[in-house]
Image (cartoon, rainbow, N blue to C red; front, side, top):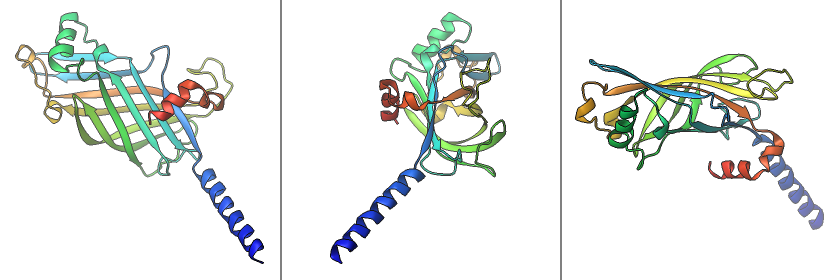
Length: 229
């Protein structure tokens, strides 16, 4: 009798663990386009000058429940931008931005790490765009602030259609814009550009996260990305 009871308890624990594992299944996506087609830009509209800077050096990772519902856990998303690669179209101005303004040797990246996502509809459907409110921590110049950012998200299901951005189609397209006030991040405008650079710039993100294939998940690169979460 005691042996039967122990067996039942063990079986119940195993079933519970298996059920928990099934509920925790996720799909992973990464932003790492080797053709550099992703883009992050900033616009500064100051009284004296309009400045636009661009970079295609953006990386990121998204892990979402396999139901593709942002509201379910576990969920994580994080994106990095290489600030030293920003190009404003004038080499000398780029140098001032890197060395005297953003101090990229000390603070090489900007990061946005999403903590939660809310929307009337939070589940992705193939080919359908949804707009979500992403709440997370935006970090630049060594200072972090919590921001709520509206993000347009479109999911494209895996397919065998030729001519798409990534083989096998599976991807998430991301479009977002957020204001960045320099005072929030202790960024001081050098006198040389004080009248030429606004105290708040608007950052736009246009990126595509491709779905990580099962065979990739066991690769050293995938393990490194997972360990970095």
